[in-house]
Amino acid sequence: MEKLVIHGGKPLNGRIRVSSAKNAVLPIIAATMLASTPSRLLEVPHLEDVHTICEVISSLGVKVTVDDKKQEIIFDAATLTATEAPYELVRRMRASFLVMGPLLARCGEARISLPGGCAIGSRPIDLHLKAFEALGATIEMGDGYVHAKAPNGLKGNQVYLDFPSVGATENVIMAASMAEGKTVIENAAEEPEIVDLVTYLNSMGANIRGAGTNIIRIQGVPELKGAVHTVIPDRIEAGTYLIAAAMAGGDVYVENALSEHLKPVVAKLKEAGVAVEEHIDGIRVISDGTLKAADIKTLPYPGFPTDMQAQFMALTTIAEGTSTVMETVFENRFMHVDELKKMGAQIRIEDRRAIVDGIKRLHGAEVRATDLRAGAALVCAGLAADGETKVTQLSHIDRGYDDLVGKLKRLGADIVRVDE
Ligand SMILES: CC(=O)N[C@H]1[C@@H](OP(=O)(O)OP(=O)(O)OC[C@H]2O[C@@H](n3ccc(=O)[nH]c3=O)[C@H](O)[C@@H]2O)O[C@H](CO)[C@@H](O)[C@@H]1O
Ligand SMILES: C=C(OP(=O)(O)O)C(=O)O
Image (cartoon, rainbow, N blue to C red; front, side, top):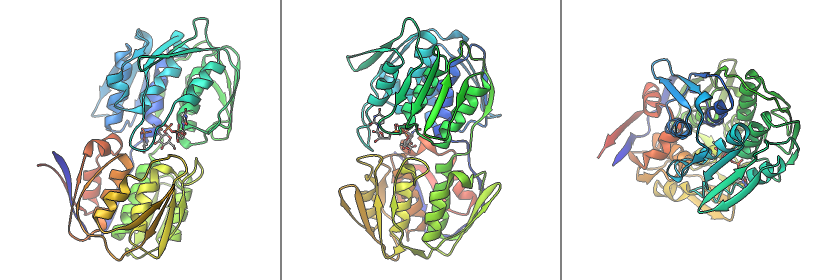
């Protein structure tokens, strides 16, 4: 079994560069299916989730040509032939469901396995389906699959999302980009990854306005052409390294981190007593490892990101005083609590709130990465803890962190990946 073995207590120093955002590259790869000519994506991160979405669209007939050295991928969807995404692929990653919008737009049909729940909550897809129906698709469910059909094409409409779901907003944008007429999405998600998807779609010839606000207007066009695109930096990866440095202590420059995408994380780090400098091409953290309690509440963007909740909770475990961590986006995203407790953390859960009594130091332990960000939180905790920490279930971490071990080693961390 593969493990990360960390000998904690060493300060982190130096520079690392953030990779392109997982949560932007996944919908953008799905969107390449909309084009009748090839698209080229630059600086694509090496992530398991990227492999998975490439497998999904390859299985639908898209020609995917990877140039690993240049970190480029070319997608040619002229050969899109199939409309069914099977369970074996969709179960590996929920974001596979993002192929539904493009398939409906291009082929008028999609049969996709239900993505189901996962460690962080039940994660239904009702908002996606309601929106597709508003665009004229008929939806049938059976045998664990969603079968959506729009044989005469999709028609633009007003779509109100009951919650600003990131995935539903992306799926509707992609579907509506080639629908007949105008679509207006109200209560849309405002995440930077949505803005990046729309930047890419507009460069393909789409007509979409308002991305980054809660009202997005889409005038459908009959055809989209491939484009060249570089995906935005990963704000969650950046935030994870900021927290690692804040906890372990040291002086770290996170190059390519965009501070305008990380406002709540930077504000909370400052509240916790960490010195943070926001520069044009990155963010610098200087910390002696002394931290103060700070409360967070996760919210859709521009609120505090749920994908940073576990890492920030790790930080509060060694912050002086009592912190409250409230999770409002997912109903069950506290799987890391039991693992952090194995390292000595004092945490109790009251409904959607975790109350953390800070202690002076964590101690090393063998812990499980129960999901992607839980894994990241445990790595941060291990870097700051006394003694040896072993993190297992690395497949979760591999989904979303490009060269985690290499980057941390460059900062002086004592971390290795072993197969025991
Ligand atoms: C690949 C990707 O970009 N993943 C991100 C995306 O996930 P994802 O797009 O799945 O997250 P959503 O914004 O859709 O989910 C937010 C909340 O809405 C609920 N919901 C969502 C859709 C739906 O049809 N019905 C429904 O009830 C979910 O269960 C959840 O409680 O945004 C999340 C919230 O910022 C992040 O944590 C994920 O990292
Ligand atoms: C929850 C996450 O991703 P996904 O939506 O792909 O599960 C995440 O990136 O933290």
